[in-house]
Each structure stands twice: as structure tokens, then as C-alpha cells.
Amino acid sequence: MRSPTLNELPPPPPGKTGWPWNEESPAVSEAMADGSPWPRVTIVTPSYNQGQFIEETIRSVLLQGYPNLEYIIMDGGSSDGSVDIIRKYDPWLAYWVSEPDRGQSHAVNKGWERATGEIWAWLNSDDLYLPGAIGRAVEALWNNPGNALVHSDVICIDETSLCMKPYRSGPIDAKELLMGNNGRHILQPTVFIRRVALWAVGGLDESLHMAMDLDLWIKLALSYRLGYLEGQPLAISRYQPLQKTNTMKLEGLICSLAVLERGLQNPLCPAGITYRGNNAYAQACLEMAIYYMSYKNYKNSLSYFGSAWKSQPVKTMHRLANKGVVGLYRWMMPQAIQRFIACLRGTENQGWLIRDAGH
Image 1 (cartoon, rainbow, N blue to C red):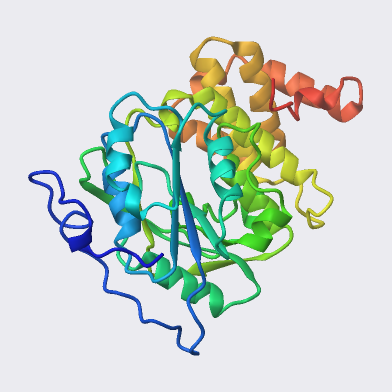
Image 2: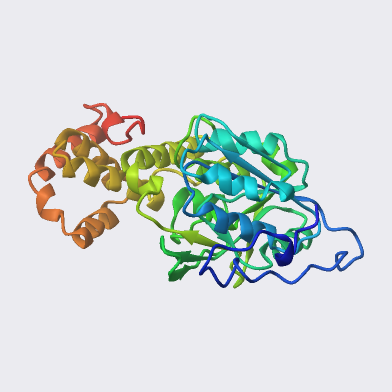
């Protein structure tokens, strides 16, 4: 389907101006630079009770000016008026449904099962594409045929759509995802993926309700190159109090740690990428330790602290100092040192140092 024009869409709600309310992307040329037709791009939006934001998301997809767009919305059975908003845009949707699902990963996979595009993406119902994002992403992939995906920097906004700050990503490979030494992240709203690569690694893991995107990036990075679009943000990411990352912090930490461990244990993981000296793993374990300590669960806190310490002892202590919680660990240190020495001597099981993320 050709992207609709601004005049073809329903008028914006009163008082709404700017992108994507009364502005649209310039129409993309009828053919690519080499004369070939633009590939079909499928966007899937999973949603549940996001009526406050979803119309802005929908319009940011439809007003891309892209000549071969397939847009699918998978609503999880919302009861907040989201369905009425979706129904307004029904003529420009390839498919939409409102029914219970088994979570975000399941909803996205269900949408992708209906997709017919060569390039796929998912855009959550509180995020937005920037003008011309789809065309720029497609050009980046077509100019780099060996890349499985393209991602970019992102612009951050709050729940009122007030701009907060840009967030820079950067070139990323499997080592960066699994070790985190440069502190870079792939920002999910900016990602566009080749269909063949996505299905080759199995799509999203529906058992994960958090960190499912990190799991997918790692699987792709272990088999393909990942592309980065320098200096051209493709999306806007909204940070708001009811996000899962705020309301499900423990599950998010557990899932992130489990995904890292899964990647490190993957047979495709390159030699030299291990737990030792692993910034991403040490930081994830330390976050778990601090979380458990805040609830006075000192046994679990000490276990995860031991894992972080074994991986990166110096950085772990620096991070504790920066967080102002070193004093709370002082009474733990004699126990930690004794158990660490016992592990080195082989007199105690080292499992306490490398925790099971489901712990």
C-alpha cells in the first residue's frame, strides 16, 4: 500500500500540531536510485491500553510517504478506547485485531506471521517514527546487503511528548552486545530487520516478557553483521512512568541476565567472549545485588555481588562507590572474601559466583 497523505487521514484531535498531527513526510520517489521498486516494509505495533499514545504512533507510521507499506496492529484486548482509535485508521491498515495475547513477544510474532514485506520492524504503541525514517532505513539496508538489520540513535520524549534528550548508539557487534565494554545499546524503535535473517534466528522468544529485543539482537549478531545509521535518528522513544521497565524492574533484571548468559553459552559465541572482565554481565549482577539489598534480602544480594566482583572486581567497587552504597556492603566483605578464597581453593562450589538468572 502507498502511504496515505495527510489530507487522506482523519483530522488530528483539537490542539494537536506538529509531527505527525498536521505534518507529513515528503513522498519517496517512485523507484530507488538504481530504478528498482522499493521493497515492501511491514511494521507491527503491539498495544494494550495505550489509548493516550497510540494515535500519535499510528500517524507516524502512515505519514512516512513510503510507496510500499504494510502496517499491522496487534491489540491485546484494550478497554481504554484504543480500539476506537485503531478503527478510525482501518482503511490504511493491512490487518488489525483486538484480542488477548500471551504478551508483547507473542503479539509481535503473531503480526510478523501475517507479514509479506522483505523488511520488518515493530514499533510499540507509545513510540514514534521520525519523518522519512522508513525510506532512510531501506536505503541503508539496500546499500549494505550483508547487514541483517539497521539501527540508529534515538530522540527521547516524556509522557507529554516533551523532548528530553537524544540518545546515541553507535556501531555494535556480538562482542559489544555480550561484553558491553563501550556502553552501547541497540535502541529497539529504530531497528529495521531483513525478513530472511529474522526468521533464520526464530523471531522473538515468547517466553521472554522483558529483554526479548536484546535476545533477538544477540542471536542476529552471532550470525550476521549489524548496520548503524550514523547521525540520522529514525525514531522517538517515549519514557513514561507506566512502562514495563519501571513497573517490572525485577523481571527485567532477571531476563536481561538470563539473555546475557544464554548468549555467552551459545555455541556461536566467539572465543574470548566470557564472563571474566565482562562489563555487561558484571553490571547486570550488581544491579540484581543492589535490588535485593534494597529489600534486605542479603543472601541473594551477596550472591549476585560475588558474581559481579569475580567478573570485574575493580569496576564493581567503583560502581558501588558511585551509587553510594559501599557502606552497606562492608559487613558482607569478610564473608565474600572467605567464600571467594574457598572457591579458588576448590573447597566450595563456585555456583554462588555465577548465578542462575532465574534465582
